[in-house]
Length: 531
Image (tube, rainbow, N blue to C red):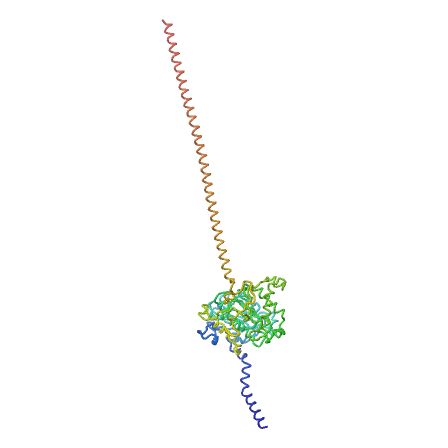
C-alpha cells in the first residue's frame, strides 16, 4: 500500500511538472503563427555542410512608407500594418479603406487573407479594377502616383470550398515610393499556360521538402517556365497561414508564376483508401486533368504514389490521380468542357518522386549564378524555413536518403529514355528556346524572302532597263532611218531642182541663141533687100 502511494505521488508530480511542456508542444504551431512577419529576406548563409544545415529566417519591412490607414466601419486599422500574416481583419462588402501617405505612393502591396475576387481601387475621381488574377499577395503599380487612395471591399463571392469565409479578410497594406521595391515583394505573373514543368504538390511545404530542387534549378537558374499546382487547401484547417507560407517559400526559391491553389481539404491518412474517404477520386482526377490541359506542360512531376514519401495517404492519393490525369489529358472523350476550353494534351515526359531503380538525379550541389553561388539545396532549405508553422516537424530538405528531393523516376516518356539522367528536360527544348528558334527561323525566312524579293526586283529592274534601252535604240534607229530617208529625199529634190534649173537655163540659152540667130538672119535679109 505504501509503495502504491509513492508511485501515485511520483506519477502525479511528473504529470504536473511536464504538463506545461506538453501543452507548449501541442500549441507550438499556433504559437508560431503570431511570430510570422510579412516579408521574408532572401539572404542565405554561406555554404555549410549540405544535409545538416538550416538557416535563420529573417522577416522584416524594408523601405516601406509610413502610412495612415482608416476604415469606414470604424475598425482598428493597426492590424493592417503590424508585419504579421497571423493577424487579419474581417471586412464587410462596401467597406472603404483609406490609405494616405505624406510621400506620394508609387506602388501598393496588399496581403489578403482569403480567396480574392475582383475589387476596386479609387484615386480621386478615377476607379480601377484589380484582383483579376486572385493573388493572395498582390503587388500593384499604381496607375498614378498619389498621396491618398481608397480600397473598396468587394463581396466575398463564392467561398464555398472554404469553411467559414463569408467575408473578405485583409492582413497587411504596404506602400512604396518607387518601383524599386525590396526583393521580398512578390510580383507574381499569372498562371503559365505553356509551362516547361508542371509540379504537383499535395500540401504547402511538400513543394520544398520533396520537390525543392525544381524551382531554383529550372525557373531561377535556367529561366525555364515552372508552374506549381497544389492539391489541398489549408483555409479549412487551424493553420490557414500555410497558404501564405507556400507563397513566401516559392518566391524565395525563385518562382515566377502564381501557383494553382488546391481545393481539397487537408486531412491526414496513411493509405490511399483512407484519403479517398474524404476526397472523391473522380473529382481528384478531373481537377488534375484540367490543370494539365490548361498548362500544356512538357514535363509533369508528382509525388511518391507508392509510399507517399514518409507514408502520407494524401500523397499517395494525389500522385496516383496524377497518373490517371496524364492519361486523361490526352483522351478525346474525357471531360469535353475542358477540351473545349484548353484542348487535349499529350504530356511528353512524366516523372514521379523517388520510384525508380535507375533514377534521374538532379544536381542540387552545383553553385547557382542566380543565387550568387548558393546551391539549390541551400535555397530549398531556406525556402522551407518560410513554412514556420511546420518547423516543429522532424523534416528537412535533403538531396540524399529515403526522401531525396533530387531523385526522380521517369514513369512515362514520348521522347525516348533519359540517358544522362540528370535533367528532367532531357530530350526536350524549352518553350522559350522553341520561341527563340521560331523567331530566328522566321527572321531567316524573312531575310531570305527579302533577299529573293530584292534579287527579283533587281532582275526586273535590269530587264526593264535593258528593254528600255532596246526600245530607245529601236526608236533611235527608226529616227535615223527616217532622217536618212529624209536626207535621201532632199538630195533627189535638189538634183531635180538643179536639173530643172539647168534645163531652164539651157532652154533659156537655146531660146536666146535662137532669137539671136533669128534676129541676125532677119538683119541679113534686110541688108540684102536694101542693096
